[in-house]
Length: 355
Image (cartoon, rainbow, N blue to C red; front, side, top):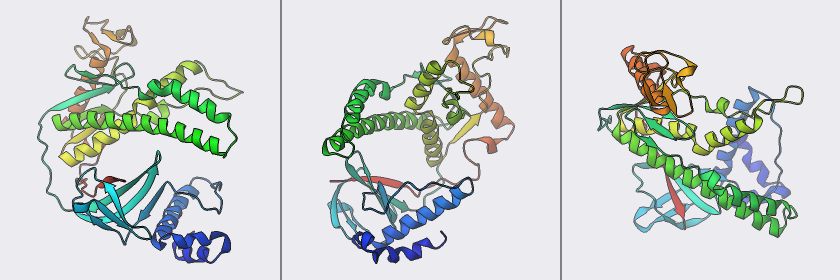
């Protein structure tokens, strides 16, 4: 696949792919570069299976590295082969435009503009440090005793989504009615994703602005949310309960919560420390006694050694904070969510909606 971007004009000469002439040449080149990069990564693991076809179809996203213009005063963007298009501005574009990516999601078109500019080293406005324990009953519990209730947006739309999915399954595949039913299902999925993303952005922004250092558990969400079904030879146990737990973890977006915290702290000049999660909810913050009997129920913590009592999630957050202090005291910032040598990134992607 090396050098495949240079061969993009060959497809335009083939009768079955003559429609490629309608697309800007750099869009095709960028797509082939992305494909080449993906193959290089994938072939190092396994041989991929091709499921596509040589037919005309809408791509979910297309990058345009050159030839774009931006007129913010009139809310217009110029795209090669399409001309000037009106858009709804979500935020001011700062810096020099590097490239533009056009994407489709939920029946709407979006333009993401990546810019570059120089900024000074940020200094975080706050000086506090906080520990956070994530959970199912409480989305996030802070070491100061406050907590954030979960949104559970998927569960709120689960029944309506299932009803539309059943209706879609009864339609003839690729028929007009099937496409309409599919659009209704996609609309619900888009709604769920947007509500979850909005909740996570508001939550992480509030935490990042109020705390210079955030200590979180170093959770392997992918491993935690694996299926427990097993195989026919060795079936799993408590499959239904584990399935419900996996659904709750993915519904609340623990991985995205950590990802947003990390990059927002970089922008503000703060830091995220990921500490070991082992026994954070079983260790007594008063005497240090570790025992599974300390957590008598899902919500109640009562130390069997000294009698200390508190909410189990608050205890977990306190222990996460204590481990974060130890990490700082030992000078082991290299184990944090980002490298101490990393500079604050200001090459940002700013999203605009086409109208």
